Length: 138
Length: 170
Image: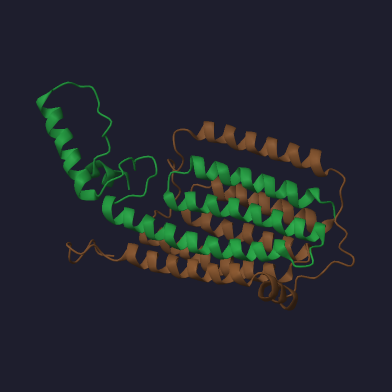
C-alpha cells in the first residue's frame, strides 16, 4: 500500500474539519469539525506505525490515547454547549461574543438599550444580539 | 486497490456531507459513515484493535453524545439555510490552503514510499495491550486521571444553577 494513501486522506479530512470549525454556526457542529481533525491525526499515527514497524506500537497506543482524550474533550465540550444553551437560549457561535455570566450580560444589554433610547442616534451598537430576537431565529 | 479507494472516497465524501449538509441530524449521521470508513482504513493498516476501539468509542459513544446534544439544544430537524457563518467563503479558502499545503508536503516527502504489510505486526488486542501495559503504563494511568477530571468537570458544568430553582425545563 502506498504511504501516500493514508497521508493524503488524513490531510483532506483535516482540511474539511478546518472548514467545519471555521464556517459552521451551530456549536455542536463545530465540535464535529474538531472530531474530524482529531481523526485525521489518528489516521496519520496509525499509518506511520505501520510504515515504521514500531515494535512497541507507539503509533497505535498514541491513537488509543488520542481517542480517549477526544472522548473527554467531547464530553466537556458538550457540557459547555449545554450550559451556554441554558444561559442564552441558543448556541450560535456567531452571536456568542460575551465572556460573562448571563445575568451580567443581561444587565449590560439592558444598559445598552437604555443608552440607545437616551441617545436616539441610529448608529448600531455592537451589542445587537438581544435574547428577545434570539428566540425569533429558532 | 479496490477497498482502499472505496474507503477513501467514502470517508472524504461523507466528511464533505458532514460539513455542508443543512440538516443538523443528518450531519451527525454522516459523521458515523466517515468514522466507520476510517475504522476500515485502520483495519487495512493492520491496526485491528484501534479499529474496534474506533467503532466502540466514536461510532458508539461520541455520535450518540452529539445527537443528545443536538436534541437537548432543540436543534431543528428540517433543512436550515443559515447554518454557516458569514465568513464561509473565507473558511473555504483557508481549508483549501490547508489541504494544498498538507498534500504538497506529504507528496514531496513521501511520494512513492510504500508500506509493506505482508509480514506486518498485527495490532491485535493482545499485542496492543502488551505494548500499553509494558511500555506505556504511566501515560495510561495519567490518562485515567484526566478522564476522571473531565468527568467531574462535565458533571459540575451541567449541574443546574443553584439560585434558579426549577431551571429552564431541561
